[in-house]
Amino acid sequence: MNPALKDHFRISLMEKLKRPLFSKCDKHHEDKKIYCSSCRDLKCNMCIIDDHADHTTISIFKYGDQIKSELIQSLSGFNAVISSHLQKEVYIRTEISRKARKIEQLIEEIRKIEDEMKQKKKLKKKN
Image (cartoon, rainbow, N blue to C red):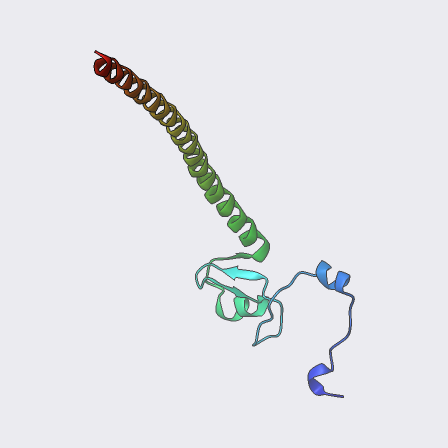
């Protein structure tokens, strides 16, 4: 048997999806479940004890919650911007429609004036 596969075993895809996907520490071969804020990196328990004891650390789960909260705040800011842009879009579309109606009215007035001028020209020719 290949030594690289000595700890390998098959699992179903559904079982794999249920498991959290943690990266492994190259040094200790443990799951990296702690976020070191000082280093801005994920570490395993042994790395924290050995090399990062004086650093600020939190569990990856709590760090995930913080990131999630930051993303939600960012999204609410984006939602406000989107809402503002949508309001401006409605205003602009309304203005475009209003201007288009005004142009149509002006074109109609020009046609009427042209017709009146043609009528006057015909009358003038007759006289």
